[in-house]
Image 1 (tube, rainbow, N blue to C red):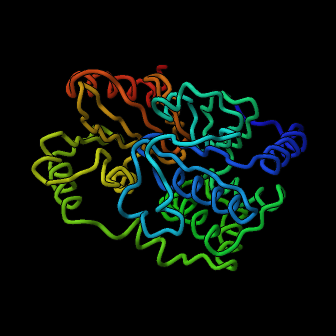
Image 2 (image 1 turned 135 degrees about the horizontal axis):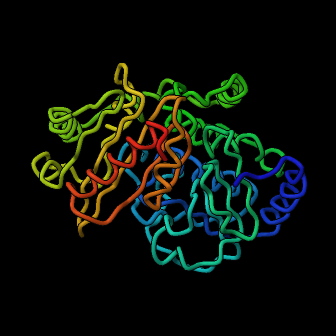
Length: 324
């Protein structure tokens, strides 16, 4: 599912042309946006603006509070308004993840790093060996004719920091760290980005963590827990996300795979997996209609919490035991 190296020159030439010729591109990413999605959409859009373009940034679920201090964050909209002449999807492995009504659009350009990407656009740049989509943009924006300034560098480094949980996932390479250093030299503030996105936590989020961690379970080198609708209501937590608890679960000692079951409205459950280098959990997520990359993946499944947990745990254990 990745872009072949032999095709990169051709694809980059095509992307350079698309970006140089557009005037009002529509820039999208997936529902429940994470730091890489947000950093990608803001970083690319700010770079386009520096060249006189008028990009429209759309995230159907809006922007989590901790990302609102980024330059350009106030431009993100939750619905598509106005005219556009190019549709770009970033950090999105599946067109459906963009959310309605954007998922019915013709996507002209798809830039992503998920190994499960379905290559749904007319032009696809998918590089799974990159730990973050923001790293792809940091690498190629100058080649496409868009220099990286301090604001763009901050957005891109933020995505790189969050998608690797502070540079600690197994796919972080020396080249990736050098790229991060390059962004710091352009003005990105690593310490501030790290604190805002990975360290700072609201009181409602802390209450969510307390409830979920109190019922954590394990079997061998697998651990899991849940966030329920009642947890969010009792904690007065406004979001539908996991309050970054999934990343904490990945640090559990002697645990190779951690799963968080996040109950949603309308009989749905968001399932998030994290792993070390031993297992490619994107394959498990794909089994449930989701996707991701080897150390981190997710899916949204229909069903009540207990039923979904039973199915997901069963399939995960099979794969970890090499039975599937």
